[in-house]
Amino acid sequence: PKNYEITIPESTPVSSSLLTLKTLPFSHTLTHIIVSGNTETGTHFKLDEKSAVLTLVKPLNREARDKYVMRALASYTSTQTRDLATITVNVVDVNDNAPNFGQTNCFTASVQEDASVNDNVIKVTATDIDLAQNKEVTYSLVNSPSCIPFSISLDGQVTVSSGLDWEQSKTHTCIIAT
Image 1 (cartoon, rainbow, N blue to C red):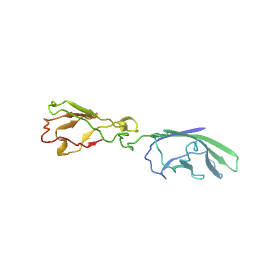
Image 2: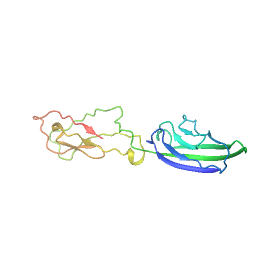
Image 3: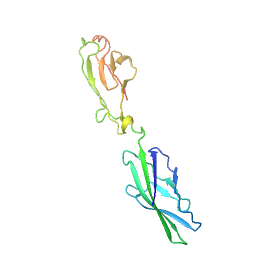
Image 4: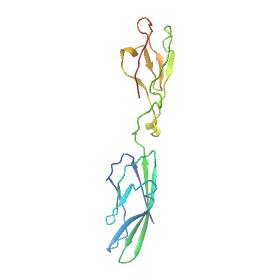
C-alpha cells in the first residue's frame, strides 16, 4: 500500500485540492474511492473517482480534530487489480478564536486614594482555545481619560501608574483589550 501524508491549516478553504493519488500505470478504466476514515465526524474530504484528486468539502476545526487517517482504493475494472493507499491529513491550528473572559466580562476593584505607583489593583484573566502560540493572550488598556492613572501588564495585572485623587474622580472605568 502507498502512504500519503499532508499537513494543512484548519483555515484551508473548502473546495481546495489537497493532493493527487498516484496510481498503478494501467491504461484501463480506473475508479478511486475512500473506503474508511472519512465519516467519524462527517465527510470532510472527497476523492474524485477518475482523477484521484482529494478535495476538502467541509470546513476543518483543529480544536475538534487534528488528524484524519483514511484508506483509499483504486480499482482497475478490466484487470480486477486493486491498489490501496493510506492518506493522513494533519490539521494545524490557526489563530481563529478570540480570547474570552468567561462569565465575567466586567471586573470591579477598589483602590485607596493613597495607593503607590505600581501597586496592584486587580488581575484579569482571559482564555483562548487555540493552541501553542495562538493560545497566548496579552492585555492592553483602551486609551481613555478615565483610565490614565492605571496600566496593565501583558499578563493582565492592572496597577496604579500615577497618583489618584478621589475628589477629582471617584470612579474610573477602563476597557481592557486582548
